Image (tube, rainbow, N blue to C red; front, side, top):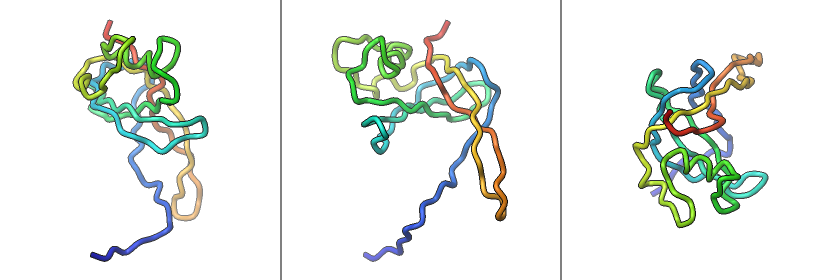
Amino acid sequence: MKFQTSNKESTAFERPHIDEGLHNAEFLGTKEMADGQYGSRCIFLFNTEKDNVELALVVYTVNDASPNNKLGQTLIALGAELGEEVDADSLKGAKCRVLVEDYTYEEDNNGSMESKTASSISKVKPLA
């Protein structure tokens, strides 16, 4: 089987924008991600309940999960107990709160760059 290929990279993906602040959310699962500047990382995917928007949190996985790093804090917020291996798939469907913050990016709009605002998750917290 033959495939047409291209060496051009696409950056066209959905970048939703919702209000900043704490939002109730459901954990959808994780996806592997290419290593970053500081090592291996993964994506934790969440769906916000009010806006029904899927947002992601990028977490470095170089070190073991602990209460002192974002990986451990995220797993704890989802109901995991640290100290043994945790299977993130077992946490799917967990309810939590996510702290949503705005970020800006540049997008090409027919030859002129346009500044746009999107949302990302900066922290995951357990339900109150």
